[in-house]
Length: 230
Image (tube, rainbow, N blue to C red):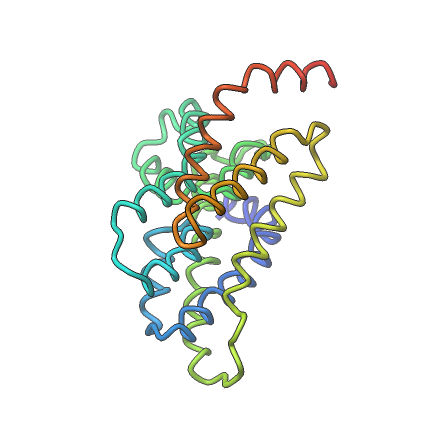
């Protein structure tokens, strides 16, 4: 309980953000014709908000399992680096390691990696409570959005734009923080070229593959430029 009391204040901002996005996601799924248990189970098993929003279109569209797999893998590829960064921190955690790995997302990783755990608080229980609390925020928010969607009658046209708005917000926050905008501009140009070449229904996967290749090939130059500016 001491670890819970120590972890809770760190997760309050996550609660606000997760409930807002979770409610929007649940409403979107409801207005798209899915029963409440769809967003509830998806929130419990996927636990990657951006993929869950993308999955709405996948479920409503044609059956493309390979494309869906590639998109989900590319969107969540950053979790590979999260896992590598937490290898030392998860050592000696015993059974706690498994829920910590399963429940790790951007926000949970950020807290567990950077938080200064108070003296006398067990590190494993602290990180586990952060993971459990963040997980519960997202699942309950998505479920409540879907349940209340049956009682809310409004014009839901344009509600799916919340996904686009979320990605635009993430991009703009990154743009404001970075000094060198070459990577961001390159990503925009690649997206536009891929859109022109492959059309609006098939440009995402080629664009992300091209970005990956370009960023890997230009990684050393971008890092040198970043170090010079620092």
